[in-house]
Length: 378
Ligand SMILES: [Zn+2]
Ligand SMILES: [Zn+2]
Image (cartoon, rainbow, N blue to C red; front, side, top):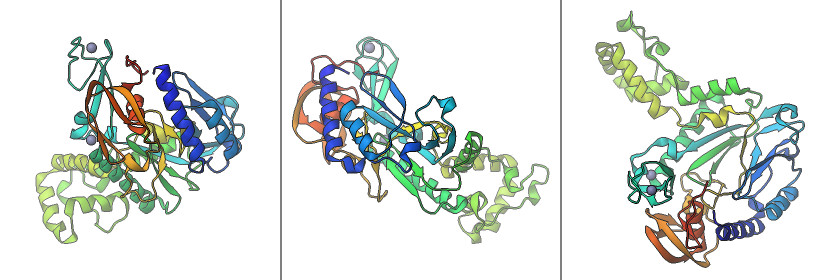
């Protein structure tokens, strides 16, 4: 990112942290957490200990970080190197990213930057140098956010019904294109990585085969199907296959006549419909530092925001805190995007005067600059 652009973004972030310090809080037991932050065009600073909101706010205003992170784990000595920290436990965290859902609309809101000549395009081949290697980034899309919300709802429903986690589930918009789910005060905080991997497999409904439901290839005709009212996956699967109890006899007869291979295929389809599409690595890694709630995500200039009402939450307005002052930038953004109920783009290497929040969004996406030259962001 160009220095002039960094200055504009850093000043805007600083203003946000000054005006909205109430939205940026340390989690419970801050003294046991590891904090970390990044600055624009520079590496990660980790193993930081902060004891209070006051210390956190001081860091935000003096260091001008581009991104701020905090561990979900608690340690006896959070500021020592990893091997000496003495891990105590870690809250459950989940990351649901609309990029991982691979919706067909994706191509329409993806920006590709040629890695050899930095030209920006949305075509398959760089029109300037014919290269096919690109760095990609994408802008907010209503349909992708809606689909990600659907995954969040699936996750919460399984956490509640199968794991008995009734309260203490907080959903945050990630600040870019997904959601972060934090579970505090649960009985699962002592789980190690391996156990968390098992939990992830369960939530994603991985590795399901007909045998899981007593349907063996050798005695397929006699296989039993679980009841719709059964708890956990057996019940969810029955509901998905049979729809209602009254259909069960008819449909199970059909499944038996279709045979083992057909049932196996059907279960695979059900896995992608009913299993939660989440990023396993985030949940499995118990030493991670994770984006801190309320802080700005430098991939977009939007804030990681607590969603009080997930269904009505609209990231394009509810997470956009940068002001409306007019800024003139050189924009090269081949796709349209919407922020604060206003449409922007597409722009083809043109000078445009737009509200600062939209300028910063594009600068963060690497497709606008205050200067003549757009420099690629690494
Ligand atoms: Zn090129
Ligand atoms: Zn989309």
